[in-house]
Length: 616
Image (cartoon, rainbow, N blue to C red; front, side, top):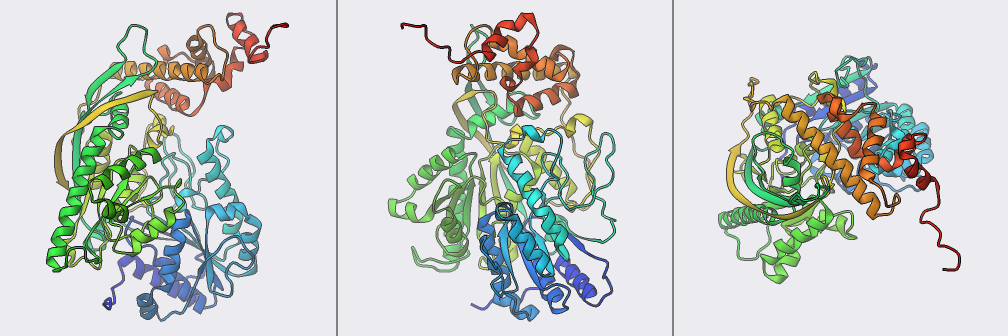
């Protein structure tokens, strides 16, 4: 079937007009183009638009497109090879997905690589950028933080990798003739600045704020409101599922019952039990209940579309709708895979349900099959497919993740909001997102509905304490050493995300009293200190003996300069954030010279484990 020639969206037309003006010499001062396009809004066509005009005008010789993951290189190649767009633009450009070999372009109009590849061979890519006038496309630029932030010496593996990407990319960016920055979000969850983008000078109490008027910069925005009005993305229906969860909690005082719960997920406001309840729910019966809702909703959708197309049973066809399952970790993803296949005949389950995680050798093949072929119809993943996956047939998402970063959730949401050209009229399509009905996700939904702004919107002023990144909720980590016991779903409600062109004032829940919040935060700090003490003794990181939790509390007080009993709310929040990212065992030297902890200092300096006595 021949695809009809699509019309360009407003941001694509804007970029075309801009690069045409650059080609005519009317905008020769522009060296950087920032395209802030809502996820799913169609930014993968922008490098094609820019390259075909700028190369034809002789302003650049080739395009180098850098993506954050290897799985996206194929999609970038497809954007240039698409016969429909070749006909619309009249271009004959070809690019290749390159490894770190010599001559990565191989005589073509450019190449596509990854941040990881540039970091592994920075000299190669810098030499290519210097040897040829290059249009450098930096895809999902928010993955590149400005390197050298304070505290980088204690950065975790993910931070270290991002810093390595930035250090390798910076000289390549400086050598490029023209740069095209692409992103669905211009905010990082950790609050850091993004490499290569201009910012206003820092101001007390404010996060980084882009300078959209910087010389040599052109900004193109495309908000979700614009995308909906142009029918570029689909409306979203949320299936919010409430539930109850119970767990065993480590670090409890002797004599206390270790079992906690059951606690509701939909508690109305964020509480100390929110994260442990969510952590438990995603690994016990609640997850199966949510999976069931998403699976059978997909099954009904596919059956309806099969009937509409008069397809024979088992006859493969495009446009029937697919299910994407986003799991909290690889172990849970494998468990979900087994559950889903158990609901289908054996042969069909093996064919229709696939797993794509970084631990799977065939993950890229599974992703490609999910995107490009009628089967598989269900893909289970952790993070490989949440960002940049161009699979318009995804109609249902099971959001079984406890990540609550807004940029991350927007990217996940966008996997289902792409219009499927094989699924019929726009009005018959809709994205369906099943998710836990916790207050953090509810807050995200409210922000998305009431703002509906472009990704380049100015940041709102925040208190200084909010600038300390709350890292752990975005990671797959055990919140405080809990052991999940059981959970179940107790209610489902649907809500259609309705765009509001006039910003509404959300009705916020009654705020928690400061004294209660302080007590809750102090309890979380105590539990986190106790959990580290138990873990470190069990793993022999420190010698056994004495009251390790007491010594760790002293270490925390010296590191932060104040005891938690006298901390303000912002200080308690900052202390908890620091503790979630650091190990107290690495700071035991703070007790040196204090006679009260002389035993622990001697033990730390002495041999461990202690040598056996002679003759034994």
